[in-house]
Picture 1 (cartoon, rainbow, N blue to C red):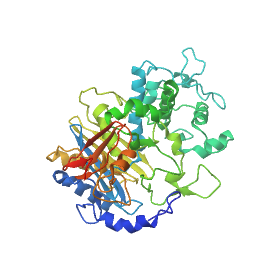
Picture 2: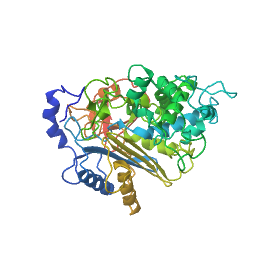
Picture 3: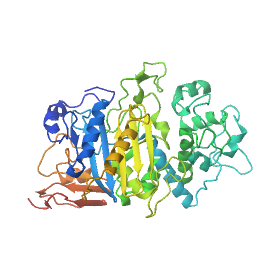
Picture 4: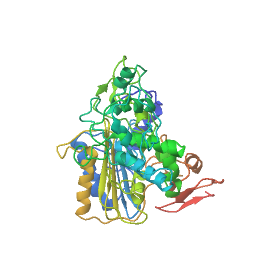
Length: 471
């Protein structure tokens, strides 16, 4: 087990227990263990995921699929940093999948009347003032910055081309920006915006620039700042209250902000084959593993900071359109989406949301990055294409929903993640750790627990009778 900062010193009990716990999983093929509810009708999904992970030496992954609004398949693959099979509800950095959520958030804010997509982003004393009050740190770099609108940034047409800009993609240049500004690294987001206001644009806002669009992380950072400024909430709080809410059965435990150098105990190790980078928090110090200080994860609000399990992303696709720009984030309101995908890539992260025009959606999460011989779109995009082909060949869809937090009255598990194979072992523990919007799944059994439930929970027992209140 590789040891990282804030990951060492785990109780030895965890390692002793790992062999017994791994035995509870149900691998479809030898080599890669599998967790989550077995779905015999969709065993081809297991086989495809295992084969791909073995071919490309990927340590962990999650594949989840919904059908007609029901998450019918959610399974974890590989071995986690605790030495147990990766739980199917493992939350991971979702990278640029966050852009789809940010797009939905700004459209909700527009529907509230708090912004127009045609508002200017920057307030630079132009005739039609913008929203963000940041001033250039070293003079205005381009008069056309006055013209950039939310709509431009939403569609990756704000004027920034990371491939030709002198700074490149500013989201990964914290050390250089801090040095140029004469401040400590890493700068905060407002300092970054001030820096970019002194940089030239690469094309006229609103034009294509480099084909149909010029993909811009910075543009979505700006949208995130606008949401925060006009709503009075952090972007995360706005998402939890307005985009992916407890009323939609998305609990706060399943979507949260990521951090550079520490992380939620349920997150995996982000693996980029040991590659190291200068530490943005200590540029003159030793290099660090790139996913843990090679950039400032906290900077990425709006375009790549969120950590989520697969279920909220599938639920998102039941309610909003996925796309790269265009109508991304548009509420479906019961209408059918057009087929589209969005990927996310960071060092140590590869993710995919694939939305079909029919009733199927796919989420793939890998805490590893890279391209295969199959394509140059990244591991998760490859896996999405493979699963799409399996579906096209014909499957018999199950009807049982398998997402949620699991409780087993009959067992005791030294490691409890609320997953199918590593459930909570009591109502008190399961409910105590739950937040509003949690689906509680009970395994068959009974408990004499009595008490008051004052949270919005949905409790069921999909695989047999569970009795609460008596042995």
